[in-house]
Image (cartoon, rainbow, N blue to C red):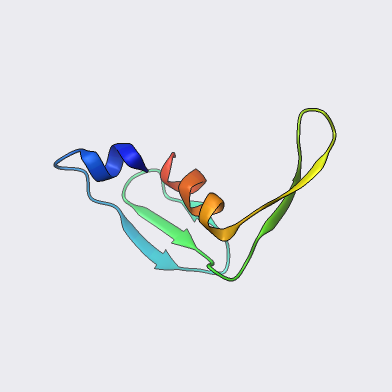
Length: 60
C-alpha cells in the first residue's frame, strides 16, 4: 500500500464488497466489517484485522 501512496500514476479504487479481493488491476473490494482467521506456517491461528486484509489486497 505504501508503494501505491508514494508512486505517481498508480490509481486504485476501493469498493465495499462482501469478500476481500482484488481484480489485479485497479480495483480492490473490501469488507471493513470482516476479520479473517488464518493459520501461520507454524500452525498457530491468528486473526487478521480488516485493515490488514485491505493492505494484503493492495499488494496484489
